[in-house]
Image (cartoon, rainbow, N blue to C red):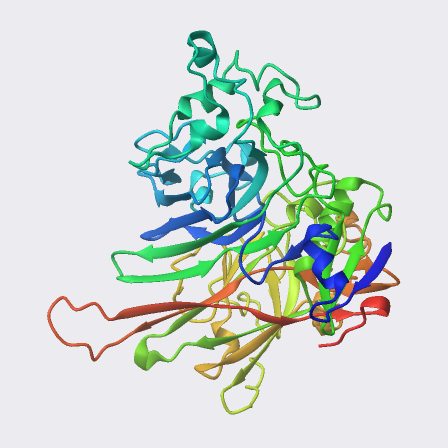
Amino acid sequence: MKIKLLSAAVGSASAIVISSAQAGMYINDLGTGETLIFPFYSAENGNNTLVNVANASDGHKAVKVRIIEAQNSQEVLDYNLYLSPEDHFSFAITATEEGGAKMVTSDKSCTSPAIPENGEVFRTLKFDSDENNDISRTKVGYIEIIEMGQLDPNADPVIDEAGLANGTAINAAAAITHDANGVPADCGIINKAWSSDGVWTSESKTTNLTGDSEFLADWAGGGLYGYATVINVPQGAAFGYDAIAIADHVAEGGTGSDMHYLPGDIRPNFTDPAMDTAAIVSVNGKAVTLDFAGDYPSSAVERIQAMNALIMKTEVHNDYVTDPEIAATTDWLFNFPTKAFHVNGTEPIQPFSKLWSGKSACEPTSLRSLDREESTPPPPPAPDASGPDFSPAPPTPPGPAPTNNDLPLCYEATIVQFAAESAAETSQVAVGIAAFLEADDGWATVSFAPGAIDSTLDKCDIDGDKTTDTDAKDPCTRTIDAGDGQLVGLPVVGFAVQKYVNGNAGGAGVLANYAIATAHKACRVGTGTVANEC
């Protein structure tokens, strides 16, 4: 692996070059980028999720919106979104009468296909063969928004066939641009281009599309930001969070249409050939660029490992509150947005250790909690034969009973529930840990380091049969190679949700429920050229 250090000195030439030279992808703490990850949506138990994405740039953008279920990161709905400069798009995810979920929007921005007035129901096609293939699985998940390309506002019209025939043609950038009434000029031009006899559909994606002349010659991405709000109207509570923004996700030399795929295609994703194989990460306050090109058997794995490096964490810290006097509840969300690329083949790819079984892919972790007076509660008693310590457990416990402080995280997105009830009103991907907390309020650490996992789980051998389990032949090294060293942990994002009820609020009909979301704090262990310690 090639590795180089970028000076962190203010005003230095190398520091200025980071974005313009596209030295590698990085998480932009300023909140804008080419790729946005929304770690959580829910339409369970009265929840609705409101999603917002904005184009803060002066570019005309083609964007993939991918809505993904929580258990194994399978798409439930993808579509193309076309944003004009300073455009804003919003939609809601809500439950259906049939027990699933759907998206609805009244936004006028162009999509392909066009979103029906009554919304579009989420689909189970990608997980129909799983043991758990119920439509309710679509109610919880997360969202990826990936910039696919940039339209050229100065291009000669090519795809407006009707306009070309009568001399009134406009280009695609003009077609998606809003007028004074907030309505795009003609979204039909975009959807016509993707129809069975359209300009974009008629050519192979492996060659230049006829309509490519309406895109910029060189990639000019970035400037997207987003946020979401999970609202529960019956309970009168809501919490919001910002999307994670990844900048310079596309490698240097990309064209303005490099990742522009058919709306019915689940591409682009994090393995797309246009994606970068290099990542910029922070090591002891210095920006370090790690280039994974040539270090893995496939370019797809190289790109995923670059993504992993961005979000690799060894320990995660946050607060919890379960005080019964204010009916407090706390959930922690753990989302592994790259996990599906590691666990759905013939053997797991590090840093993950278990294959998807059709109902789970459990990774053990270690939980340590403290109260607010710097004390560690004594460990709970070992479980007896009647069942696990964790309660409530996932719907079908996929492994042996957890013991001591070992905490299995079994899904792409898992809710760790600290109280008897869920703060996020989510149950199907939840694992309860109330039995481990002898203090009502405090803070906790969840560690992904192999050495922190209790020996009762035999490191990552959580099904108790390592000798015959082919997907655990290299249990839990939890590392990715990085230069002359390694990063230790798992690639995870997420946040904590706390909800309170004010029982002293007076007045008939007064709602006294409050909720907040706080981002996880973390540390990361590295060795060699990326040496760091928690």
